[in-house]
Length: 184
Image (cartoon, rainbow, N blue to C red; front, side, top):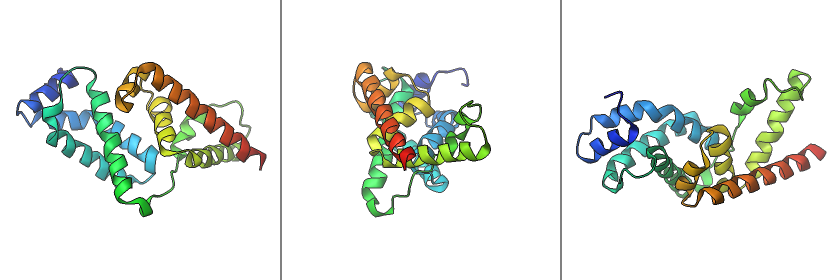
């Protein structure tokens, strides 16, 4: 069973073999957790949302066609779970802590000291917090989850080209906000 593709496993789930959902869970729980953690920076909430994704996968297994990427279908569901959670709990939204981006900056030659690196991370974190959730989401998917634009397009319900444009615009907006914060 380990050799089966995600699409094949999901088709088995769709046909009633619910034990294979556990394999999909084991394969994708870390990626989903990382996605949610980058969106809300709350480990406990992220774990709950991962569980909610798999509950939804089970609930909506009949909608899976096997066409396209399972990962894109799953992340589209994850995106909806995230949206629904924060729509339901508007006032409880916590700030986004992107301290996980530190690994991206560790080998950077632009930072001369540990304090400079921490300052850059803090500024990027604040800049990400100032972006609208949909722009933050596309950056998390493209830069932190390193997904292909074709998959991001499937997740967002747009073409690959439109996903590239959205990522480019989000990155441009992040750069603008970052520069404004740096001037302060």
